[in-house]
Length: 404
Image (cartoon, rainbow, N blue to C red; front, side):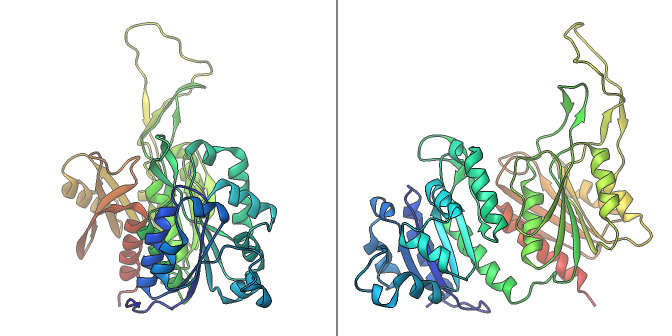
């Protein structure tokens, strides 16, 4: 057994479905054992085409279960026995087929059957081709499972076994094991329980005409990761999101906007009684003076567009008479520390997280690094996944909030 620290030990039922990512489940089972969990693996029949059950048995020390009608266990009603045993169910990888049958309430495999019978929390780590993930039927099924209280972890964006690149990869085993660790921590009480937090994320699009806009490359991933980390710590979290193609973080209220002015209005509408405001959105500083009614036609070699300044959301929140704890972001291409500290002072905020954009981090990337400043100190958060980085930033905010 590994050293679990303050982690509440739990009996984890690891479900493995048919997909090339099934080989990663072996490493995941090892990491869960290392954390101190008891792990019971249940495979679908198709999963055995990708990884052998002996692999899991060697790691966990327990016989793998896969038969719905198993004479060795049916006397105890095998699926009921497993459902009663499990304190947490993690399906990794979860194929599109498994997800569809789970949403439909089917029970033609042992894993599907126990998912219907179990009362423990269920987390699903999808893994499939990017086009399958984007299919409206799959998204419908995923949203339906979320509405029933199941947690969706992933998928990640990156290279896929089929040669495509995009969303659909199963989260890496280390990431999944960390999420389970965080869940165990938050289930015994998070650091933001009783606090209301408002987060902005993503870009804003400032329209030039009905088909064109001025925008930026922000994907919204950092802000969404922060919202999820806050929700995991028990915060009542409102997420105001610009135009991004990301799933709503579990437990968060999401408000969608397009322009900087819409984001400003949404923030001011919801800022009352907020304890912490985190302005992670890459809000456009300027917008076209007017939006043309018709599409701009190609004509002269040059054209001029008059821009006017957008409202400064972060500075406006920091200037409120009864203001929340304010955290800003600064994405810079040069002089990172100098510009971040100047912004901290100029906007009169409590903390600023600065990141260098480019070099495969920052905008559109799954990884980032932050240099965080507050009035009495600073901390460097090294390059890592945005979800892990978000947890570390939320810890820093909690420390500052709870200072004597």
